[in-house]
Image (cartoon, rainbow, N blue to C red; front, side, top):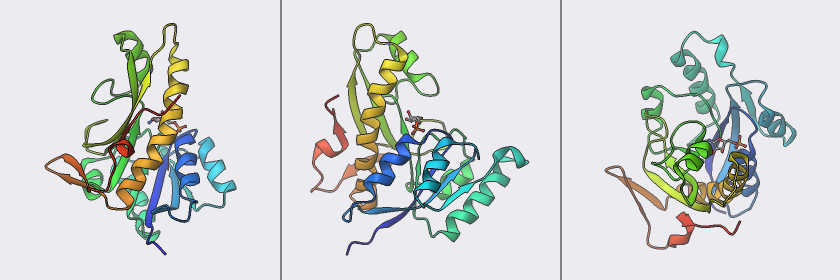
Length: 217
Ligand code: GRF
């Protein structure tokens, strides 16, 4: 029996990356178990899916809290109560305070739909098309206080084809996200990733293609 890292997923919407993580975590040998799905938006579609799966869920309506810190205090209490060791942000659309981020330093990861450091923020696929890049992709990184920054753990490359619309690109990248995120969480949960001086190194047994790949799409 392997010891699984107790992991929370934070969402705000659709939750397709959450589904990819939950489905991956069903495998007996997967090194993380999903012990909590929390959303800052009670109406998040993904939350309904998580409830239907019988997962522990929590909706913390950020609008009812006077400050970010007050919202995060409730979240932190829930994370502690569930014995959470790792947090995976999956389409979580709320910036965290530096205090919260520091508390979860190197234990909180995010997925972003571009090859960071390019195209941070919103409308990443529009940004990629406007820049005319031929390859885009997605990135899993440790979270730092500044949005879409932090040591890069894993990336997947995705081609941009002539005539692509932002939606075409979004769905091609999303497919890669669903492969990359479970692979990256697995690396972290199995403690095969080291972050020193903001640089990521892997333990020797980690194959390059685990963290840097171009899924066939
Ligand atoms: C994904 O593209 C993710 O990279 C970004 O927000 C989107 C969330 O999609 N951070 P979903 O909720 O996981 O379907």
